[in-house]
Image (cartoon, rainbow, N blue to C red):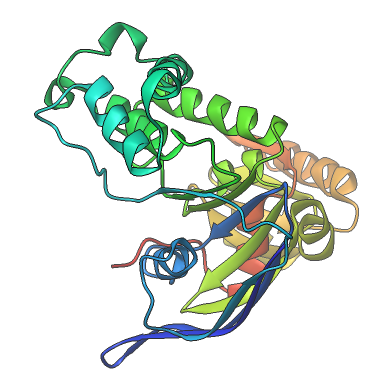
Length: 295
């Protein structure tokens, strides 16, 4: 269990984090989600020990402090060297040597899908390959706690899928994973629990299932040449993707009602569908604005 108590962080006049209180259980994938600039990376760097000048406390309650693997948002590799040499370097930093180091390099290369490029220089790698190697370096010493800061930014779909498979494998091994992202769908797919961070504050936290149950409800989405008068007869949640989301305690009934109106007025919507609750809907409910990318 990692307990974060009243953590605050300033960068000159800017308050990056304000009164952060969190409890992160062992053996779960815990997500930090929010827009760029929300404070996720600052909190991640504090947890990883990169940033030490902050107020508050962080306590690990396990009997044996967990070993830590940190995957920074910025790729930290020596690009003039090979993948193997980079892994050797990070392994030696963590105290690996001899046959154990050699075996672990081979294992990690296989895990990150780069065995066939083991001796290639990193500067010849794609962005996705570099991201996978960056993760591999953090896993060389088989850490108990893995902290990842936006590990899929700018990667190709194949590398993204491979990274997801690596995270699922870590979860099966019982590792604790802290995963920061502004991609809601990644958090929803990979994480067990989540903390919403916005403006340096924790907006809400809890299990994903509980948050979806508490703050979101099924909605009906309609897209097309819809008369503005229609927007008054039900609770419009928000405009989305060129259409409208309508909330209802009985979404199937609302779906039928909208379909009937379209038929009566000879309107052919390009899309009319039931939409299940998503984390982005929860974020919208809590903050009053769609998830946004801000500097």
